[in-house]
Each structure stands twice: as structure tokens, then as C-alpha cells.
Image (cartoon, rainbow, N blue to C red; front, side):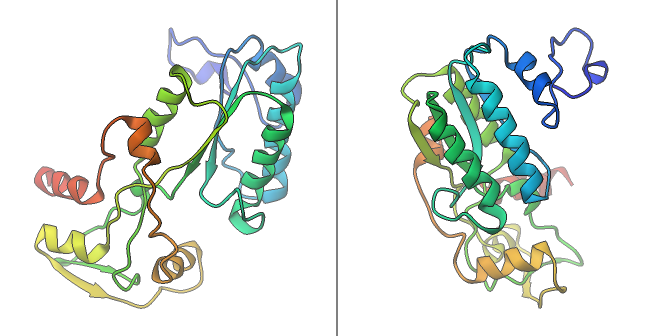
Length: 230
């Protein structure tokens, strides 16, 4: 499903659908045996909730015929209904209320956005050496594909976490200096760093490895591969 079919690569079958156009969602979902609902990139919670609920409503329309729904949610959405998890929580509740067979894939933060960068021969962070349970998008995408094409996942809610890592560990693996710094100032990354320092990203579950059927990719191995390329 894409908003602009003309931008799709030649030969790739697509259907037009837009979160802000409920009628287009019903047409796009028509006859789908299994639907993967990926969270909207919208940052405003109220609008994001409206978009997600429109998608769930389209999916549960008996005339559309969607057989089951898989939703990419976020860790903690089952218990926290405020802040960044507000829209995920509302969407999970709507899916549960829909009566459709479902699987909830609660994602951690993405490793792709956290891979340490070496600058001046050192790695810096304001995490006080605490662990991060991030996972790479590629592993999460593979897990979603396994759920969509496999059996035994309906009615499940998976809390995906990647292998725990820390910035000092990556620095040691790359044989560079690690230095603790102060947060740059108010903003998303400062908030996340504060969460890391509080240990909020150290939770571990076996769900991602179990659904993948293999260990998830580690940030340390990725950093070592990138250092060899450079």
C-alpha cells in the first residue's frame, strides 16, 4: 500500500491507500488475508490515533474481508497510555476490540539510529554506561514477515528486544576511547539518554530471537563491520 502509486518501482504491484483517507484504506485492504499495519510516522498523538483507528475500522469492515491483523507497536504500550506510547496503546485496544485475529509486535528503539559514531578517535555519550535493548529494523522486518507467513502467532503480543549493549562496550570492541559527556540540551535524544541512564532500556525478552529463529544482530558486530569498511 502506497500513497502515490506513480512513485512505485516499475513492475511492483501496489494499491493506493492513505491513513488520512479512510475510503482509500478500505479499497487497499479489500480481500487481504493478513494485514501488516505499520505505525504512522505522524508525531502528533491525536492525529496518529485518528489515522490508526481509521485503519483498524477499515480492516474490521466485514465487506473488506481482512482475515487477521499484525501491528507494529512499541514496548510498554500495553501498560502506558501517555506520552510516546499513547497512540500505540489506543491502537492496541482498538485491535483487541475489533474481534479480528491479531498479533502485536512491540518494538524497541531502532539500533540504526543509535550506532555509535567515532569522532576524533573516541566515542561519546551521556548514558553512564547503561545498557540499550535496541534492535535493527532489518531484524524486526524479518520477524514481521515470519509472523505474517507462519502459524501459531495469532492472539500473541511479542515484546521485542535486541541484544543488550552499551557505548563503552562498543568503544572497547573498536579499541577507541570512550568519554562520558553532558546532554547537549533539551530534545528527543536528551530524553532518551535520561531513560537509558535510569535503566529503562535494559529489559530483555526472548521474543525477537524466538520469532526470528536465530539470534538478533548486535550493535557491536555491526560497528565492527562498519569499521572494516571504513
